[in-house]
Structures are given as C-alpha cells and as structure tokens.
Length: 345
Image (tube, rainbow, N blue to C red):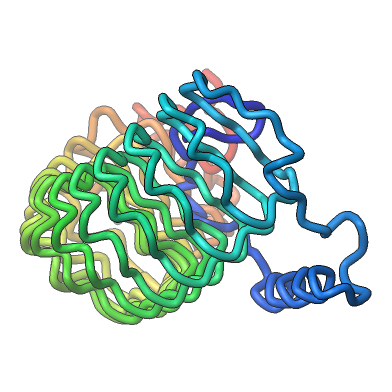
C-alpha cells in the first residue's frame, strides 16, 4: 500500500489487537458537516478543514505513483491526465464521492483511507485494480465491486458495514480486512477460495461459521467479538495463525484439524484449562494470558511443540505462584519468552 512518505508497503496489522486504531464516527460526521458549511460559505471547521481543488496541485502525466496524502483534497477531479498511473494514494483527505476515475484504466492500487466516503461507486472501469483501501470512511454497505475481478487485497477497516456481501466475483482475493465494523455474521465467502488472510476483529460476531470453502486460509482473526465457542474451523486445514482474544470463550476445543497452527491467541477469554491442543506440534507462539488457568499439569499439553518460543500466561491464577516463571521453564524448556520477558540462561 502507498502510505505517508510515499513508500509502498503492505498494511501492518497488529494481530494481537487487530484494528485497535479507532476513528470516532461522530467526530468524522461532524467534520463532514463542517466541511459542507465551509463550501456553502458558512463558518465551519476553519482554514485547516477547507477543501482544496486539484488545480492547486501539479500532476505529472508520466507518473506511475501519485501520493497526495493529507492535502485537504475535497473532490476527485483532474486526474485524467495521469496516463500511466498505477498507484494513486489519496489518504486523509476530505473526499466524499468516488468519481471521475474512469480513464485511469492502468490503475492497480487505489488508496482512499480516511476520507468521508459513504458509497462505493464508479469503479467499474478499473478492471486492473489489485489493491483497494477504503478504511476509515463512512461506508454502510459493501457494493460496487463486481467488476474488480483482479482484486487481491481489500481493506474496509473502521466503517459502518453490517453485512459481508457482494464479494462473489472477487475470486482472486487473498486478503480481506473488515475489522472495526458492525458485522454480526460470517457469511457469503464461498467463492473466495484463494483467500489467505481474513480479519474480522472488533465486530459483533457470535459464531464461527460458513468458512467451509476457505481451505487455503492461513490467517484468521476474530478478536474482540462475541464468541463463546471455538467451532466451525474443520475445513481450515492450512490455518497457521488464529487470533481469538477478547471474546467469551470458555473451553479450548475445536482445533482437531488445524494441525499446522504456529500461532494461537486465546488471550482475554474465560478458559479454565489448557486442553485439546496436544496435537498442535507446530506451535511457536501461544497466548493465553488473562484467563482462568490454575493447573500446572496443563502445561503438558504444550510439551509436544518442540518449536514453541513464546508463551503468555500472565494474569491467570497460575501467576500467583512464586515459582511461576521457573515452573514454566521446567515444563517447557524450549520456550525463549515468557509473557513480555525473554528467558535468561
């Protein structure tokens, strides 16, 4: 992705606390109203929020990467001169409508992160688009993406989306980021068979379901939802990273087919026992802090994971033991980090 400073890089996701950045929707709405007042000649958000026009910006017709971050651009216009552009970054502006991009048929990456967009529209001609970022806007629906059949990465973090829908034609999609929305159900993913990473943190999901077609998924994050049970993961045989922290899960279970897991995060739940994971011999990181574990014998469940490097167990009843760190080291001699502290030899 194109970000501040003009560098191109993948979106960095804090997988332990996915999408912790939190745009205040009310504040964003307020800015949108203030901006409208400025355009109507009324006193509004002040000079710092007054939109500028593209006429004030020099565009190089030969440029392949155009980075216009945080420049108070209020309207997408005048970009038709960009005959060769592949990456267009318009982060942190005042854009309300996606428009006048029809001629940018060479575009492979479009970044509209942190604007005031309410509807996904007017993207039909961008058939070569591979990366689209509409995070931190005011979207309520996933729509208008049907023609983007080459899309590989779609970022819709922190909007007001309530349903997963209208993605069936995006069969080449490899990453889908829907963190910090209002989604209640995992659904309509059947055609996304190439999907590698699915991020659904900070939603209102109550059940792990409808993921049978996602056999190529390697990363799944459903942190900070309303889950009470680990289930529905049987088909995810290639899963390597699973993030389920900050839910209401009570039992560690349902991972029988997920033998390739290298990272398991079930921190901040209501789990009392480390159990049913003896078969996860590929584990490298195990996060189970802030639960209810009180039995030292449970650590035997992790003994088969010879590559285990990191274990988080702080703020469990176990930690009250004065020999807490020593007992973990004795039970799991391969571990190099206990909680946030590295093991000294």
